[in-house]
Length: 110
Image (cartoon, rainbow, N blue to C red; front, top):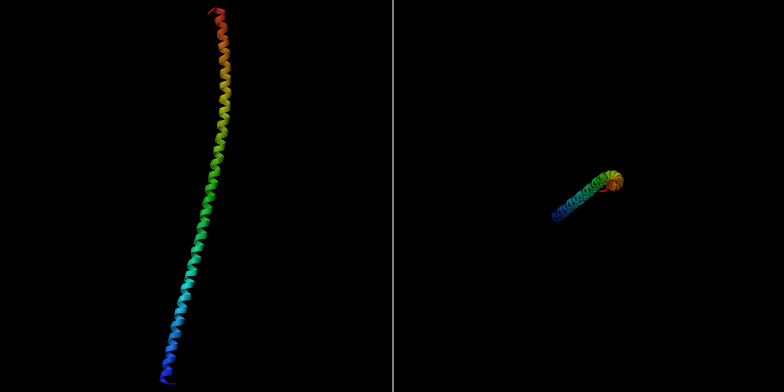
């Protein structure tokens, strides 16, 4: 083999080697990028799962507060009905007392 052919062979081999190294680096970087994107996607999904769980917990707590508020409202409504009935009874008693007082005034002539 002549010196020129050895030189050309070495040059070509060197260029092919550099090309393979560059291709290997590009593939590695691409795979790293894919791994990073997959990890980010997994993190995003995990974050969404966490947010969904928190939202469900918040919704459950809100539903419990609503049930408690409805129960308090029902108790207050019953108390208001009792008070209204008591007020009506007191008005009736006051009217009876007024009639009684008017009757007494008639009797004593006042």
